[in-house]
Image (cartoon, rainbow, N blue to C red; front, side):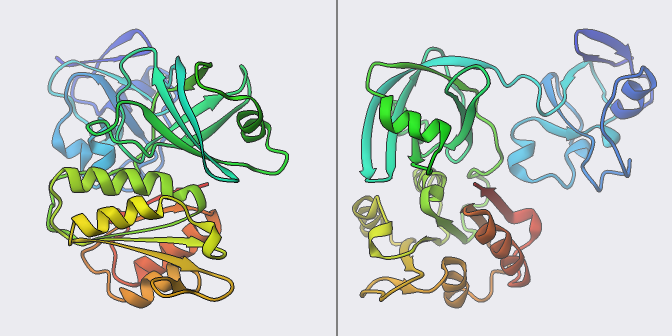
Length: 317
């Protein structure tokens, strides 16, 4: 008879689902529909395997991180499980370098004190002190970069960004969290077309995702659109153009929302410019990162353009 281990306690599951097993013992697992639709009862395995049915309907990026639906999981062997927010540990990291990518954007490279598992496009929390932290997406790729890389935009009166701009230097030690998030490239469909739309430092995760996909041998189109107010609002331009020259399936389009757009630049809001050039996104994968207003609008518009909601990955900040 399979057992479910949660919080150090072991429970006999019998013929019950993981959700029924745990809630019957007083474990407060969030749930709603109890039929595998709402995904409120999302949990993850710490040890053991769950039946594939327990992952039905999940985004591939969640399934790859061992998430499953407790209401649909009838374990066939012993498993140890946790709620999604459990197990986000802190660790120290050494600052390898601090570079001004733009006057208001820092490129920070970090060397964690222990093995750090992540996927390009996920995020980590960076701690100023015990109670003050901010989330930053990872622009680095595990197979390509020795250090973790994040991009930090200076926010007016920002507690963490202001501290980083004024004080951080190579050799310092800071605390970070483990990586989290489901906005990353999942292999398995190499011919699928992918559109990536971002604003500001929303370029950071998209830069990592693009390089990860290309390194993985992705053959479908990879169309990256980056939005800024004017021509001075862009960075990593040369790096992206170099990728564009090396990989015929990758294209980079900077989009100017105000003022004139020089040759090679699109004019208008970045998601509108992207959809003007790709009005039919049926079968495409979509990544949206950056300004929450843009991300929310683009999520709706890309869905109406034919993209499946299951294929839309968003990271608003």
